[in-house]
Length: 172
Image (cartoon, rainbow, N blue to C red):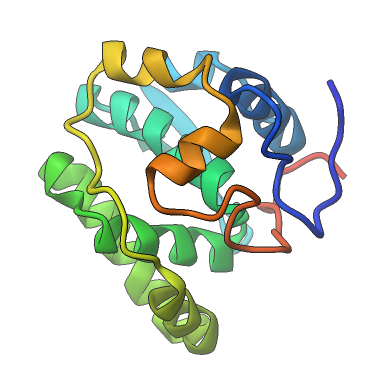
């Protein structure tokens, strides 16, 4: 799989499917985790298993697309930034469990990186509200170009953020 510089978002000319594969490889994730009942989490060096109920199994697919579209990383700062982006685009489409995860990430981000979180809040462009999640809708995105998907959400074709950090367990 092609590796991309962490100093720039994934290129817009890739298909969303190819961008997702690059994102998964970069982070050491795999597709099987989407459907696992429990997923490994590393939060500030603390590793634990986290429940993955049905509504999160679908939401995390969209969440990963949001990372790919915006360019926000998967480290603690990036998770807070993407959570702000999701909040500003309407997290009501997700179940209460997922909404609580998003709000918790924002609160943690405001504690450890308030400038980055507030900057992310200001950077969120007006755009499309998050769609009602469905596997069919999600699959329809995968053959689009990443740039077209970004534009459909009111994002620049090149993405929002220029540099992304990776979570603690990502391959080096």
